[in-house]
Image 1 (cartoon, rainbow, N blue to C red):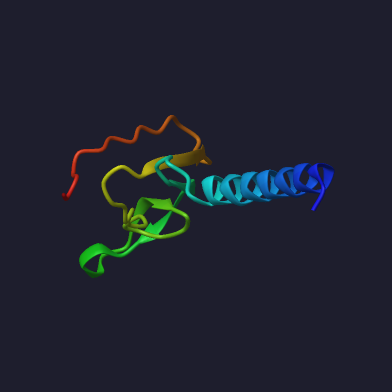
Image 2 (image 1 turned 135 degrees about the vertical axis):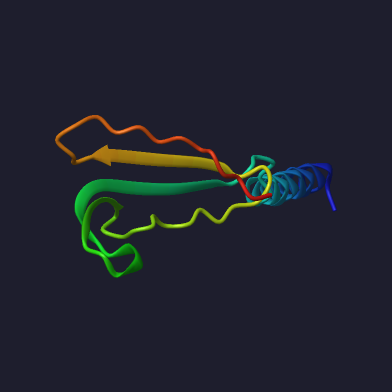
Length: 96
């Protein structure tokens, strides 16, 4: 094989290896995963203990949806307040 043939073959091998390594690095991401939630806050009637009363609903349900997550997950929660008054969310209960 001539010197030129070896050079071309080495370049092909280099680029093939480069593409394979780049693909593997692209697949194996070192970033923590993200979980996205969208909450629509509304009011409606709820029946705790069988008694009808006005309550705050998250996505039309009471109590609101659970957030199932593990350590190092990034949570992005978009909250849309459809109430006629301000609404405050506090994270008072975290079960670990």
